[in-house]
Length: 286
Image (cartoon, rainbow, N blue to C red; front, side):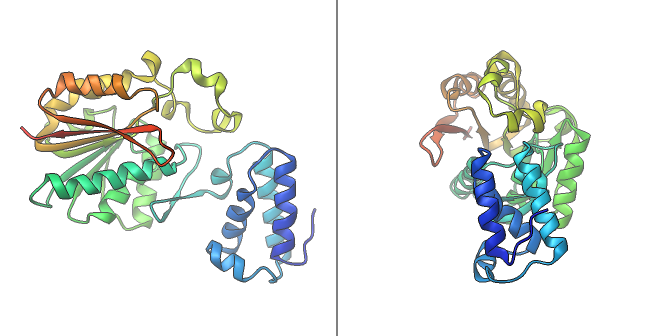
């Protein structure tokens, strides 16, 4: 087992070991923050601090576990999203930075579209609960329902909601089924959207560890968008907002599903921070 004099030496070893094995150096910082239970800036301020024998063993073990192929977020059991830490495990997709833009875009549009703030929001396919919980904490007046087909994922979402003190209603079921008989002002979803034949181009780290039910969809990745477009007209108040994360090649096809279902709506395809089409917003006025 490796031994290190201090935090800096541990990070130096881990960075070299990660690069030599084709992994990102940032994993070293993520694991160290986890081991010390602190922020990145705090780690940088304490580079000369000694690590206990227990911390050294834990740090080395987690770095080796990540090098063997497990995503570092699952190794440490946490991921940052919209400025908060969320529990993650193999039952849920690891929240991505691009999805933060869906949250931000929704908040911006809420302020323009609605005159009142006592709004009802549904997050369909919530996974870790990152979208639903972030929306509730950023806009406390919202009533938020989070749904998922996976019992294990919903348990993770509930755990995150409890930890972050977000009062959301978690419901088990497929797509709109758990929303039956209700109307909503806002519906958000980041559904599985990868075509099965794209698997060969994907990282083995993702394929071997993240839940396939949260990654892949039929009809070249489009089936759940088509179903949502067909089902949602029965659930939307007026005015209303629908926000979706999409695969960067799917914009026009997904937009057409929603134009067919909501002919009077304003539909926009929005790019993410990397300049790729990544979100669709459907503003329903009448």
